[in-house]
Length: 160
Image: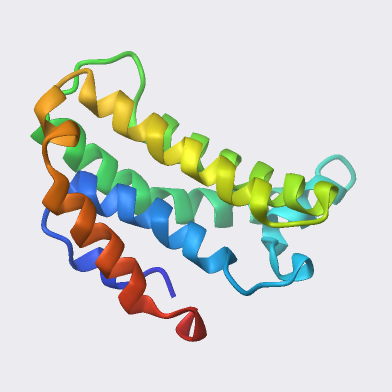
């Protein structure tokens, strides 16, 4: 689903990262709470201490998915001249932790609104990380924002 998502076709790597976040938010729409989950994330929470083999399989799955976003982050870091203490890998894993936490909060609070709000915060956080290195990039590039939104709309929730 993620490998063939329309955001993958965006030419700018930061646009791809932000559109990935938008895509994750779009997935929430029309879903029940039991659908707001990641099997691997849920499984590792339950067996991390009692089953090292399952824990490692979960780690591999989560890390492999994060690596797909990490590649775009690394490209954006290079393109926008980011010189920071954080890495593409650390941001990609942070994004996964934030998304997992958003799903947990949605279940705890009985609705996906909190998950959507968390994902919106994640989007703003990523924009701020890159804006500090090239303020014009995020603040003035309104066409990229429109392109990201249009790309996410093209996906259609039925295909997700």
